[in-house]
Image (tube, rainbow, N blue to C red):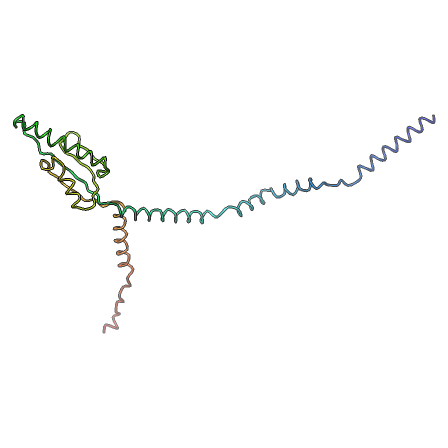
Length: 208
């Protein structure tokens, strides 16, 4: 009987201690506080605010990119304008009469036409002829050549073995940088004319 009373008393004490611990306010550890602060900082509103503060405005970025593009374009225009003169050359070989003597036809082809084509090919390898070739189905040759001057071009063409057998037409070309500068000057002149103040029209009373 005494043993049962003692066990019951101890059980009551244990239950009382457990209830007292449950009633105490729970203490939050520093790590838990940090997690709560991090969670609140990552709320949708806070995240949006941080992102907007860190990123530059799209307007500033767009204007900066546009200025860079304009500067690059201006540099390209200056480089193009300083490029050598370009010419479009069209050479039409005179047809050889089928009734011409066999020896004459052979001489023209071996001593003029074939060496002339090889000469133009050598100019292309030297980088003086930028591009071109023989027109398909005809005896015409067309190419774009660069030269320091008209005299330089004449010298190169006169050295072609079949120059005396061809009807040659030359068209000088403006490169794209030169044409841009020409258009700019024309636009500037047009704007200066349109922006001039118009003379005042005298009124009827002043005219009298």
